Amino acid sequence: MTDIAWIEAAVAGARPKAISALLRYFRDLDIAEEAFQEACLKALALWPQKGPPRDPTAWLIFVGRNAAIDVVRRRSREAELPDEAVLSDLGDAEASLADRLDDAHYRDDILRLLFICCHPDLSATQQIALALRIVSGLTVPQIAHAFLVSEAAMEQRITRAKSRIAKAGVPFETPGPVERSERLAAVATMIYLVFNEGYSAPSVEGARARLCDEAIRLARLLLRLFPAEPEIMGLAALMLLQHSRLEARFDEDGALILLDDQDRALWNGAMIAEGLALIDKAMRHRRPGPYLIQAAIAALHARATRPEETDWQQIDLLYATLEHLQPSPVVTLNRAVAVSKVAGPAAALAMIEPLATPLGNYFHYYGLVGHLLLQLDRPAEARLAFDRAISLARTPAEAAHIRSHLDRLAAEAAPKAIAASAR
Amino acid sequence: MLYAILCYHSEDVVGSWTKEEDDAVMARLAVVHEKLAREGRLGPVARLLPTTAATTLRKDQDPPLVLDGPFAETKEQLLGFYLVEGGSLEEILDTARDLAAANPGGAYEIRPVGVYHPGGGKP
Image 1 (cartoon, helix red, strand yellow):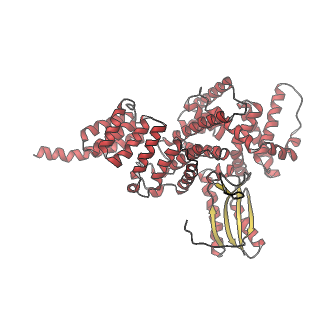
Image 2 (spheres, chains in turn purple, cyan):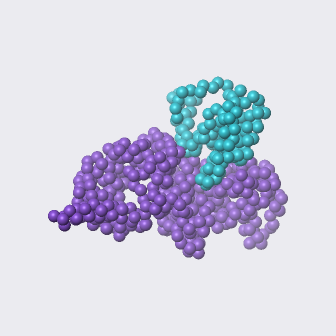
Image 3 (cartoon, rainbow over the protein chains, first blue to last red):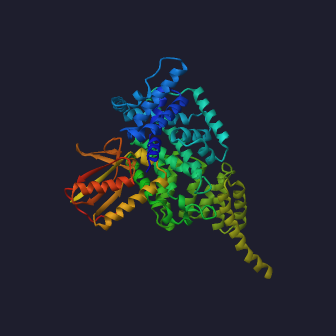
């Protein structure tokens, strides 16, 4: 690895801690970002000659802070700061700063930074964009590309989000235990939003799929700071298990491949192992939350080497628990898939028929209704449901998937029609 | 003599590698591994899952206490290890330098092995 590549990796790794510490000093997102930028430029200039510092994160915070103080002072025409040679010669200052920045400090700093990104005044898209820009350090063009909008539009979206936050005021006091757990829950939701933005991408390639990696990285970061939170373990496990199927989820034409039809050899074994390990750890806490239950469901799929080996009974039970904890028509819809395997398609159809009103605009609802009707040998009604699903599809992959069912229906209907006309 | 080469690196940094960067490092390391295997010196090699997957059993009390997370909060974390046969510390240092050239950043701690049971466990 070249010097530059090594420095870039070190800087990227240090970013969340450094920006969040700088935000604590300056209480202003723009100044914190500028300060970090300055520190990165100095790192690129100085590290190749002097060698990397012992603690790159502490170095970046220290240098970034001084650079920003410099700017702030220049703006207010105050006294000059020491020159760069003094600044660069950190010596003891670096060590003492590192001491002061213990993990407890980082913990609330990073949580604050993430929490700011999920301010309730911001739309989901703004939250995701802000987290990717500020915490993950993706560039505006990268984020714009992921959202399929122009760079100017994304720049504007992020600027607006920032000014909203500035108006709302940033919560700088150290949070109490209740506040801390509220912040954790809000941040977990935001991280899962980032993940789903990537997961619903129409293909493996492209900038949006990268969002899944970023979300998993954010969850690991959070988990290192809060190692004993079972729901954060559950969130990380859920995302790892879902993301482990990435290579198996699409065919060459970009059409979605359902779980049952996926080549399980393409699933990522390391991600599955990590997900399962996290679930094991979280289960010991004996207070499963929604993320952990969803992860446990994903784990039952991951553990089955063939679709027939899936423990649908257990999946049905887990969905029942989830329905109880977090009642929602979508959860019931998912449970109906397990019910169809355990008790048959008629029972599943009866279960979801009342959901036609709340899920009337939901692609997956009509997809499942169509499937169940097909299993019940009611092709005419199945075709109607599939037609409805296609009209609600959000991606070409979703539409293509349903179209393949319609094509199969048409192919099966054709010989019957010929037979009928011959008669 | 058998040596353990314990691999320490900042998890923040290794975790921010893209898949391509990670694959490139592993491919460079594989070249060194092959050389060691040809020389008949390569023992078990392990890359550990992130420390977020770690659990610690504190056994300085009875009953022992189970804690989530790695044993120590450190700036650089134990991310993997090698067992390598070597005639001398100098030889092992050369091996570690080869590995370092393939995967710079962080540190290798070289520890002679006292007791070694290959064991029969199948991962």
